Each structure stands twice: as structure tokens, then as C-alpha cells.
Amino acid sequence: MPRTPRQSREEPITRRDALKDGLSFSAAAFLAPALAEWLHRDASRAGDARPYLEAAQGAGRWIATATIADGSGARWPADPRDPGTVQLDLYNGTPGVVPFWLELHHATQDGATLAQAVAGADFLLDALAKEAVEEAGLYTGMAGIGWVLAMTASESKSERHADGAARALELVKARAKSDPSGSGIRWSDSTDIISGSAGIGLYLLWARQHFGDATALDLAVRAGLALLAAGERAGDGLRWRIDASMQRNYPNFSHGTAGVSYFLATLYQASGERLFLDASLAGARYLQSLATTTPAGGRMVFHSEPGNEQIFYLSWCHGPAGTARLFHRLATITGDPSHGSWVDRLALATVDMKVPQQSPGFWNNISQCCGNCGVTEFFLGMHRFRSDPRHLEFAELVARDTLSRSTADAGGLKWIQAENRVSPEQVVAQTGLMQGAAGVGLAMLHLDGALTGRQALIRLPDDPFV
Image 1 (cartoon, rainbow, N blue to C red):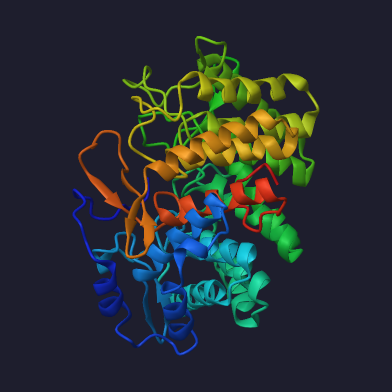
Image 2 (cartoon, one colour; image 1 turned 45 degrees about the vertical axis):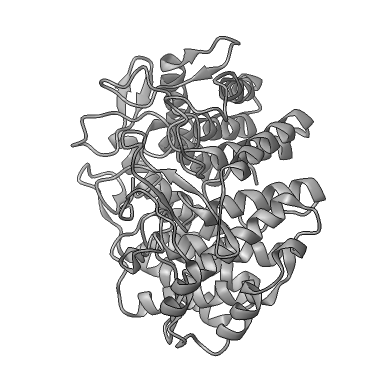
């Protein structure tokens, strides 16, 4: 996974003191007054008996107390206790907090929340100007920043952020290099969704639609060709490792075959090139060959090999909530009901494994990546496409558990959790998208929208339920 903030056992802290120190009262004039007013707003009246909206607003109040703002914009340390954890990745860093503010503004039309998003996007513009972003990855670098700037521009109607988004896209294009196989291009040794060609390729396909840029599709096709060359035969299927030097195989979405196959299926949808669909189907066959049956007939794929074949994660990164994205995309493209049945069986495995109860594969984690919120988002996506009330009910069941695990702090809400299963004693409350309060708030806003009929604004480039 991407870099993580310093992890230690959480201690009681006062976020009002952090607000005074963090903002240093040098915040941009357009941000400070609105932020101060919003922080002191009566939390009990915020959501008018809408618990998920109220939870999102609580998350926002806690995140806001960690704001560091100056002439370059606003940023949020992943761990508010450590200003050194300010990062430029979508996964843990400031880029992942901005989409939460955008979705909260979309839900409430509160000007203070849009001001936060704009200030965060300004910080990303400053990072681009300083050439501070080294990686190209969707969750680790330039592709994620480009997407965030474009989403900010769409909501704020800001030309400077639109220009920044276009600049980020050009930088992603410029950083592509020929693949050593002689087929296509890549940005690094990584193939995966998090930092590699699959995630960057999804961003390029998104950019092709958003900007109408045909060269983005061409580059995505060339990235797909390099991924085809990187595939390894496994029975009658194909598999992809994170990179050629990685001996451990992670088959699921964030780092493995499910994510690469999902990109290739999406690439076929955009390009019409059959070789990408054939490779994606081969990846699906490989995953099906690994799947374990749960007591009620669900299916799930183990965490990694060798050695972790009996460990089953249950959310976005290494579990059914992520892997189901591939089968949903294949069902949409091919019309073959067998792929849709695999989505159902992966969802059944999630329920069958007693989520949201804690287990070896569903530990003390509420995040979009590894825990509760990734499951909530998956079942909300299922509900959008199937209109089955059971999916919405289960999404709400998991969300209620998430709310029960919140901690009140500085007039807001935070979630103290273990990011890593292997280090359960290392717990921390984070601000970010994939492991923190921004991701919790985003899931809560999506659930509130599902219950009230509001369409979501924020859909990540790897989301198939759009």
C-alpha cells in the first residue's frame, strides 16, 4: 500500500489547540472566516435527523481542525498530530480530502465546504508548479491529482483548476515510457490499480471522456498492450503480479489480476479492441479457479500467495467488494448473466462472512480500502444498478456499525483504527480518503444520497457503478 502516516496508540487530544497552531492565522482570507464560522456551527442542527449526513458533517468538522493553510492553499496531514504526514497522494494525502469537501458541498450547498475544496486544490496547483509530484499513479501521484483538479473545476467553475487539470494530464502523458517488452508503454514497473498502469489507464479513459482527448485513449491502448505482455499464463487463464520482481501474488483488485483485468475490460469498452476483452476474460477465469466457497454458497478469493491462501479480506483492496467490479464490468459489456451471478456470489460471501463483525479478514478497520466503507460503497453500487432494497439495507447495516465506532473530538467525529491487520496494536485516526475520515464521510454522503434521492457527485475513475 502507499506510504502510511506514523502509527501509534491513540491518546486523547484537543483539536481546538491544533486549530490555533495549524492554521497559524495565516490562512487565505477567503478560507479563514468561513471555516471559523462552520467549525462553531451547532452540530446538533446540522443534518435535521439525517444520521449519515450528520456523520459526514462531523467528519468534516474534525478534518477542518487539522487544516494547515497559507498562501499556497490548504492541506491536511494524514495524521493530524504530525504535520510531517502531509502527502500528495490520493490514497492518504490532501488530494483525497478534496473530493470529500466537494461531495459535502454538493449535498449541502454550504459555501465553507467549497472554500475548503478550492483551498486544497490550490495547494495541489502549487505542488504542480513546484514539480513536487514525482509519481504518475492514480492513488499515488499525478493521475489522482489531475482527476481531483478536474472535479474541483467542475464544481467551482474555476479556470485555474481546469488549467491545472489539463496540465496534470499532459504531465501524465509526458512521463510514459516504452515498455521493455517492446509492446506499448508504462510509467513504472507496477501494473496495478494503486500506482501502476491499470490505474493510470483508467484515469486516461476518464480523461478521454471528460476532456474529449483522443490521445488519452491512444495512450491507454498502448498501456494495455504492455499489460498484455506482462500477463502470465495460469491454467486456462492469465494473472498479473504487481511487477515482474514481486514474488508474492495478490490476485484481487488493488494490486493484482482483478484490477488489471478490470482495466482491460474497460479499455475494450472504449476501444473496441477484442484482444483486451479476451485478456480480461482470461483474468476472470483465473480468479474463478482460485475462489473458495463460503457456507451459504458465496465465493471469495484469498489475500495472497504463498502463505496467505487461508486469509480472506472482505473489502475493496483484496476482497469481494473490489473483485466484483471486474465481473460487473464484464456483465455490462458482454450481457452474459454468468458474470452477473459472480457479482451476486461475491456479495453473498461478504454477508456470509459476517461483515461487519470483526474477523481475521475484517479487522479493526472502517476504511474505503480495507474495511466498512468499502463494503458500504459496494452495496450502494449494487443497489443503484439492481434496485434491490436488500443491498441498500446491508449498506446501511454496515454504515451503522461504522457510526458506532466513531470518536467525538473537537466538535466533530474521527475514527481510530488499525490500518494493518498484522499490526493491530498500531491505531490512529487519519484524515484521508482510503484510510480516514474523508473516506468515511464520502461513504456516508453517498448513503444519505441513496436514501434521499440525491445523485452522487464524486465517482472515482475505478468505480464501475456509475
